[in-house]
Image 1 (cartoon, protein in one colour):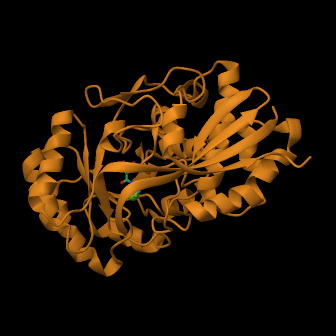
Image 2 (cartoon, protein in one colour):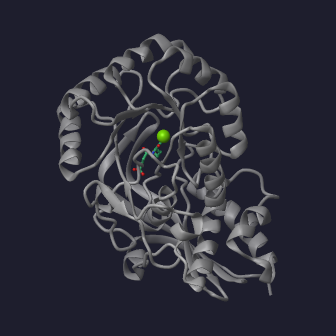
Image 3 (cartoon, rainbow, N blue to C red):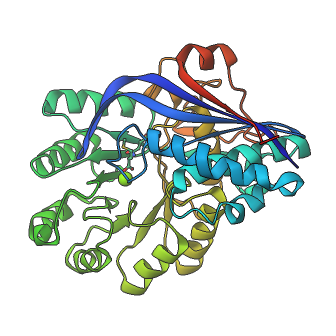
Length: 371
Ligand code: SMG
Ligand code: MG
């Protein structure tokens, strides 16, 4: 197939409630949406990057620049040799920028699979028609507000609660939430790199709350520190930011730095790399689950398809559309008994609502090959 044109839409979608993590608070999801027009049809992708480079070095303005000046020209230069499976190799000359690369891979794959009449889940090797989902709950200084959010999500049927934590907002909220959700209910925490290995003794206090896991307690480069924490805590260590590739995973496995992995296709540069990480974890007996980056329905469709692979045995972060937005860019994903249904239509299996997209788009780049 051949790429004929590529549109980059910058979309600003208000969140239904603020989302605070150890690195900041968001009230709006500002995201790049990719529309790839090919000779076999149109495909869609979404870049996981955020407006600020706080979760990772990637951010919207940087992603836009690298897409416009470097990545998209490489896809145009491929001529008729383009396919979803070829995208990662075509983009390899550009170092890093994994989220920007993944958005392109998904858009090309979506067009290709739509033309072939195959769903993304089927293409990836999915084995489930619905996936268990949890919800990621932001930090708040108001314990009553936190409890009311958690109670609401329990009512809605979410199968697991994840609390964002940071120094000063950890043991207290975890103790209160454990009390609220009851013994045995799946509860986990995510620190987004906010601690140091010298906090090990403090973090070990979380052990008594019987958490499923603690996600990314230390800075992303600190595999050795995570290995030390893994020895000192009973709560399993899960890596998120640290795992940007299969090679990073090999490092973590060699050092026993984690017992569980959060897989985000954007963070690792593509759905196909995400599947390789899944396969390696499955072989190593490491449970995985699918993370989220406050995706719109476009990104959510790919996450849910990925989550249908056999190794995704823990509930994912990608919640129903109404947990994020009053209006999604696609038909909403709706919680059904704590699960999201895996789309069965060809490609991503979702329809982008052009009116909604136009309403929330603040800027567009229209890219075409050089004549
Ligand atoms: O998509 O529901 C979601 C967000 C889940 O907590 C979530 N994501 O570190 O796992 C993580 C964070 C990264 C995004 S914070 C803006
Ligand atoms: Mg995380």
